[in-house]
Length: 347
Image (cartoon, rainbow, N blue to C red; front, side, top):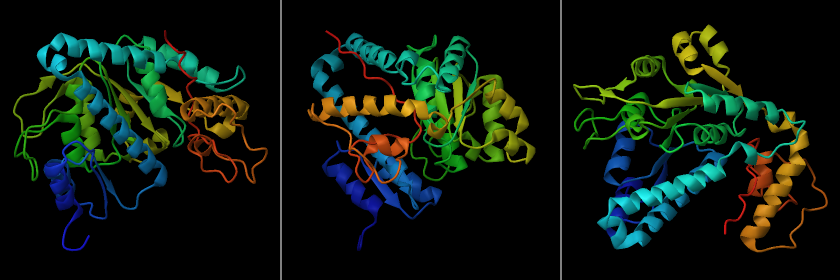
């Protein structure tokens, strides 16, 4: 924009209209610029160029969910402010809904599908309170499986926290995960609680773990070994009880052999490995996935007579099946991600 940066514009937006969720796409990727955006303008997501369309769509979806949650909290009004018991009740209800939504039985697959073995592994992983490493191509549903494992485990009543380890430079990633004290580094304008502390008693999902630097891997390994974190700039450590589920689209064993990923950290993370198959490896699931998506769209758009197009010029990907990007398909879905069956209506 002429005569004004995006961050300064969103800072003014924040002052005038604090409710909207603010995001920015920028070519500036210096840590100082990102920190300024996060702190001064209260930006929810700082997206650096070049950006990926699929990632942008998912980020916008998350922002919409956050805005809805904010409005739901406002609706509670005086009752929420007056009693912590009401807040606990709201949280309990939301977690109950999440347990129903993220359930192994609702992952759409046929009996011959390779997803059957994945689901059985996931059930076993949920029973054991150990680290899980989920591998697979982008869009195969690694985060979805992580959520299902969490809500099927003994930690289901605690928080499930997500961080994309490939989206931030080391210093900001360390601050995001472990927290920081005011003045710990340039741009640290206030104390910040890390996501490991937020997830205490629950599960933290570390996506794109293969993108982390060797220097950060050392710090993460220490946290996993000792179950303690030390926020940047702090003198004292804090005990945390967190289950780690990590995911990557890289071949971490090959990365270990090439010296780009620490072997000791790999074995810490891969205590229970699970591999997610791509959609091309499970073609028998496509009709079930498509019908599930069609049913959801009929309900969402009140279009009971909606049908699939008779033909398409080229086979769509599963991401297309859900997001509507095919030439003659209105319904298209998210690449190879396993779809959840619609949640049964409650009385």
